[in-house]
Image 1 (cartoon, rainbow, N blue to C red):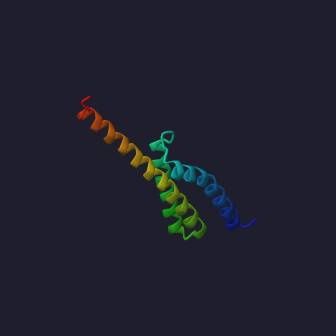
Image 2 (cartoon, rainbow, N blue to C red):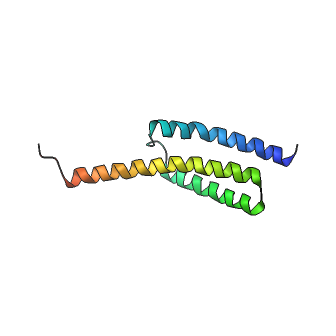
Image 3 (cartoon, rainbow, N blue to C red):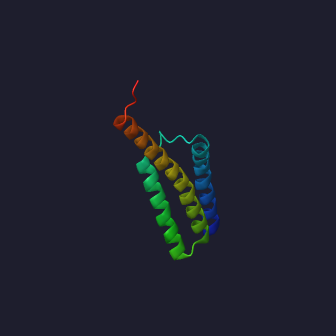
Length: 100
């Protein structure tokens, strides 16, 4: 089997495993059960693979890894947004208690 065909199949499999989590996260905006460390390392790894693919002119990997990095980047953005929002809310409640 041609190496490019195998690479295309692998890319489709990887992306098809990413889409359900990204869809669920975008739809529900819930990220409590997703590790910030995992997301950060995953996005960083995908970006490095994309840079490698660009360096080696591997079009299928440039597309696949770039898209995967972008999809996980969306989840990472939502996770950071949610975590910052929670931190700000906790700070506001602790600094300025409501008078009952």
